[in-house]
Length: 193
Ligand code: SAH
Image (cartoon, rainbow, N blue to C red):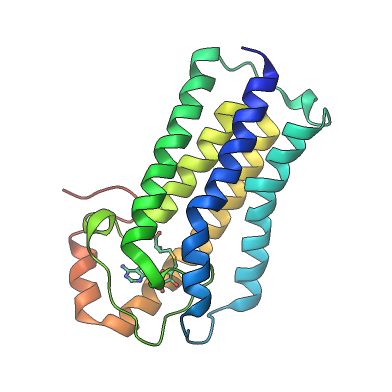
């Protein structure tokens, strides 16, 4: 398949991500929140991930600057990347529907925050973070570009590693035993059966 088809597909998939997210962004803006935890670190990491998930992929889509980092990925794997990304978007829509107004880009709790344990949260504590791994891996496969792949994967892993412990500590403080019990029956990124 021509490179332009992969580039166009990736651009459409990145735009689709923002469309899937849009209702939650507006709902979250209307929900009163507590103070953000670690705001400077979180804002920097979120910005870095915006660069990794949107900025760098768009440099690949729109310019030849990253062509030297092209990596020979078989056509069938690149097509698999597109399907994997679409499956991820469906998963993301389910996650957003379940989490509703409790979603936020940064680390904080709503004034009337409830612990969600339904749907994708039934067996995984951080399904949205699982989704971001699906996103960075599928983006790497579609672009067949080692720079796009490594930048996205490392930026996401950094945010995940620094955030997940603080997020769980915040939820433990808020929900106490309920969250402790919830932790026992769920996996962080992969389902626990
Ligand atoms: N880590 C989750 C949610 C990401 S959105 C995931 O990967 O799916 C980040 C916000 O979600 C946090 O600020 C926290 O307030 C909230 N949150 C995380 N887990 C939650 C849960 N089980 N129930 C309700 N809110 C949750």
